[in-house]
Image (tube, rainbow, N blue to C red; front, side, top):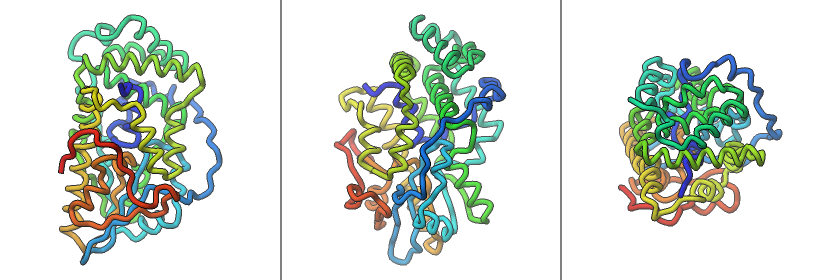
Amino acid sequence: MLTRLLRPLLVAVAALAAVFPLPAAWLPQDAAVKQEPAAKPKLERPEHAFIWKIEKEGHKASFLFGTMHVPDKRFLKFNDTVKKAFKEADAVYTEVNMELLTDPATATKIQNLGMLESGSLEDLIPAESMEKLGRIVGDHYGLGVMVPQLKKMRPFMAAMTMEQLAVMKEYGVGKALDEQIWNAAKKAGKEVGGVETLDEQFKALSILTDEEAAGELVDSIDRAAEDIEKGRVRIAELAEIYLSGNEAAMLKYAMEDFDPEDPIDVKFMKALLDVRNVHMADRSGKLMNEHPEKSYVFAFGALHMVGDNNVVQLLRDRGFQVTRLTAPPQAKSKSVKAAPIFKPVR
């Protein structure tokens, strides 16, 4: 079973809605800001990056750029290929319109979606798990004041909030790579936009029923407690894989615990990746076909670029030539594909 801990972790490379600023009523921001980000290894300009060139006869060249949705400052040290793509682009599109993430209406929508209509999280998970969750949030993150709010959350939102706290502890408070890309493009006078709606992302993130998500939240809490005891920080592990530009390593980490025979695993991954990959390919392709005179950079979570039915392959299926650039040696041949997870949607 793909534990619920890994599911919110995976959205760091697959869904921008998961990095929404937590509503002020949920998180005491002054407490969060006090957390010092963990020291990171120094990194010179990375040689490798998740970037692909998109070509089609009669079209200006465009690019796919894989991102990770956390505020790691090392991610901004683009190599020359990435810098050139962004500099020469006429338009930059992220997964969603980044300005919506700070819109008060979005916070209201998150609250409406993420809170239980009645009852408490304590009614859905064992008392032992609830106590363990309280210790993690209170002792490890120093935010025990949040526990009453967590008890009002649906299981999937409690898991996402835990992951947000993990990101904040590791990186402090800052803008994710995607938001910084958006802001830089807008400042440079480029066209900016999103290929998905927030509603589509929220639908994917909340695809499991509360009962399905509750069982997996218990596993997530247990895994988080074990990791804290061992000093393991999974978001940092994923960041190192991202910085390596290694498709195979990204795919292996993402799918390590995936069980194609588990209907819950299939349900979640289909919503998170398969359905959304088709939307991304369709809408990116439509933009390029309608405006062949423009050069686009499409900056999506890196997980959308690897595995079965990925955006790279879907664009190829739609008549575009897509070529990986600045890949590490083991990833240069072609995009890495996984064993079939579910029937591809074209």
